[in-house]
Every structure is written in structure tokens, then in C-alpha cells.
Amino acid sequence: MTVLDPAPSTTLAELTTLRVGGPAAELVEARDEATLVEAVSSADAAGVPVLVVGAGSNLVVADEGFPGRVVVVGNRGLGIEGDTCGGAFVEVGAGEPWDDVVAAAVERGWIGIEALSGIPGTTGATPIQNVGAYGQEVSQTVARVRTWDRKLRGIRTWTAGECSFGYRTSRFKQDPTRFVVLNTTFQFRLGDLGAPVGYAELATALGVAPGERAPATEVRETVLALRRSKAMVLDPDDHDTWSTGSFFTNPIVAAGDVPVGAPAWPQPDGLVKTSAAWLIEQAGFTKGYGNDRVRLSSKHSLAITNRGGATTADVLELARELESGVRDRFGIALVNEPVLVGCRL
Ligand SMILES: Cc1cc2nc3c(=O)[nH]c(=O)nc-3n(C[C@H](O)[C@H](O)[C@H](O)COP(=O)(O)OP(=O)(O)OC[C@H]3O[C@@H](n4cnc5c(N)ncnc54)[C@H](O)[C@@H]3O)c2cc1C
Image (cartoon, rainbow, N blue to C red; front, side):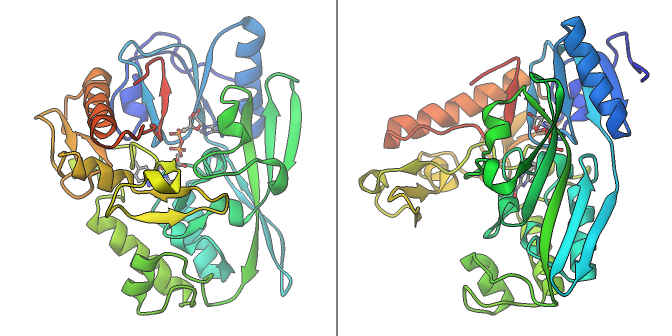
């Protein structure tokens, strides 16, 4: 294992899509599983703080930086355990770019992640917050997650049922410094048609009724087009994409607390999910709200974007303003979706 950057010269701004955050005291790029485990476990043994980073698309780190070892996950590869009429089991290295996996799945007729096209980041991060979009979540296709347990100092493999998946959460997110995802195995059905379309906007764009199916290739292209129209596909030339995607999760509240006119998605437990974007807009923060350094995306009111030169302090200041504006107007607390390191709202 080589510590690439023993002197603090690489900043978290260079490792994250929001492009803010100060220096890493140490940097290790782990291109294989053994290096990943060694990088984390040797730092743990020495009492050095560890920050595991995939593609940095859901991460906001303090301007002071990270006073320990930043380990960039880079172990790649797809292992196909079975690809028969019974379905495909595919084991994916944590550092594999997620959208490459979706593209491969659509090409090979592996069904169930086509609506998750265009989401930035690594595959190992997808079970952490149970990545989801357009009616799909990875929990619907994850079979098992292989991890390094930093507390027990050993490998532990979790079946999907043991992962405590929920809306943008899992046992890995709930216990944030304990598990390092080494690889994830997905179980896919086979076919040309994608899974039933579970999101009204996508169904309309595809010209099918919600619950109907459409060719997976079309679902992927349609999702990519929808996402591009909202600046939700990374583009280095477009500051509207210098973000962490949605900065807040959609609040889940008692049915009686949903504001009149707000979108309402009933949950199995009787609570109702409503739209953070709607709340932000109705509280008076329209698309583009902010200043020269940091503002809401001009295409999506949930994305806080860096216009160049923003600091983490700038991002947090705008986030706090949005949060308190929504709380004052509707009495609903917004919760940040990205992981905040060394800072808080
Ligand atoms: C433009 C844009 C659009 C987005 N759209 C969506 C969307 O539609 N749906 C959605 O759910 N998310 C979305 N996101 C958020 C983000 O892309 C996902 O959460 C993604 O899975 C993060 O992957 P990453 O590799 O970048 O993780 P990072 O940002 O590097 O890390 C996120 C967290 O996971 C931890 N982590 C990363 N890898 C590992 C590992 N191998 N083991 C243990 N911990 C690890 C990190 O320590 C950190 O706490 C979007 C982000 C952007 C910038």
C-alpha cells in the first residue's frame, strides 16, 4: 500500500462533485480489495481517522479538510456468477462506476436498474443510502453486500434482508464509520423489457401507464434525457451539475401535516412522503436562488450548486437558509441527503 499524499496537498474539493472541502492529511487510492482493507485497517490500528470516498458525489467535507487518511475506493470488476434463464447474479467491485454497471445491465438484458441510469458515483456507495430514482431503488436488486467490519476487524457479508434498507438509508448509513463496502452482488431478472415503471413522470415520457413495462434501452435513454433536463447528469462544463444532486431528502410526515397542494406519496406505514423541492419553492426559494458563488441549480430547486469558488461554509449557509425558511413556513424539518464530514447544518 502506498500513501500517495503524505503532505496535505490534495483537497476534498478535487475529490467531490460539489468541489468544496479542504485538504486530506493523507491520501490512499485503493485499486484492489486487499489494499482497501489494508488502508483502512492499518489506519484504524494506528488511531488515524479514516474517510472512505467513492466518487465524492454525496459528500460535503469541511473547509478545514480531513485530519486523517482519505481512502479512495477503486477496486473494480464485474463477476458474473450465473446468467441463465433463472436470472443473473453479478458481483460488482465497490469502485466500479455505477452508470457503467447500469449500461452493461441494459445491454445484457439484466432487468431492474435501468431507471437508475445516470446517477453518479461508485457501485459500493449505492447500498449505503439505498440509491434510488424514478421509481427504482438498489434494494430491489441487491442480493448481498460484502463488507469490512472495522469494529470486529473482519469480513462480513449481509443479505439484502439484513441491510435495513429504507428510503435513502441502510444499516451502513446508520452506522457510518463501521463498514467498508468491498463489493455488492445484484440479482437480476432477464429480458428486454424493464421492470414495471413505478414513477408517473417516467411513465408519461415513455408513453406507458404507471405499472406497465417498456424496453429497458428506452427506459435508460428516457431517464438520461429527463435527468439531463434537470442537470442531474454530471457535466464538468455545467455549474448546475456541480452539486451533490438533491441536497435534502423528501420529508416523511403524518398525513395531516402535508401542506395543502403539496405532492403526497403515501408510505406503507401510514405516513406520507412529500416533496422537498415543492416545500423549498413554496417557501420562496426559486430555482437559481443564491449568489455568485453558491446557488440553487437553475434547473432543479433541490440541488445546491457551486458556481466556482464556493466554500463549504457558503454551501452550509445557503442550506441553513433553505432549511429554516421551510421550517418557518411549514413547520417541517428538512434533512440533508449528502454525508457531512467535519461540519453540520
Ligand atoms: C448530479 C447528481 C445526481 C444525483 N442523483 C442521485 C439520485 O438520483 N439518486 C440518489 O440516490 N443519489 C443521487 N446522487 C447522490 C450520489 O450520486 C449517490 O449517493 C452515490 O451513490 C454516491 O456515490 P459516491 O461513490 O460518489 O459516494 P461518495 O460521495 O464518495 O460517498 C458517500 C458516502 O458513502 C461512503 N462510502 C462511499 N463508498 C463507500 C464504500 N465502498 N464503503 C463504505 N462507505 C462508502 C462515504 O464515506 C460517504 O459517507 C446524485 C449526485 C449528483 C452529484
